[in-house]
Image (cartoon, rainbow, N blue to C red):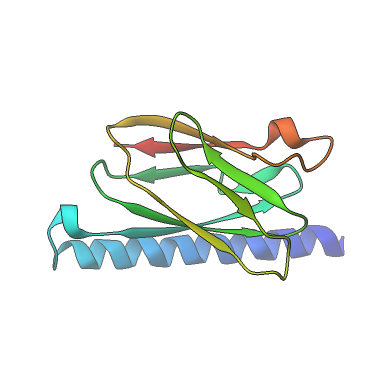
Length: 129
């Protein structure tokens, strides 16, 4: 029960953080040209999933992806790109990667460091509009 409550709290916190980032980027859009902006997205890796597992971004805008782990070491690779990083285990910090999608579409990301029996299920999508 405590584990479920903790996971629910983390997800709620992550959603609130993501909402704040989106709100901040909306406010920034009125001040700066679209091509000069950089969005920050936070993604947490934990026990065979990424939270959130789908993110939406605007085409032509560079994105900083801040990655943390809630348990062990994980990897983060965006298929068909040169983005590939190792996420340190819980309590050992975070890693930030920059991604500027070359065009609109769907980009799959996955764990690139074998992390256990459910490793193959650790996937997500970046939707570029």
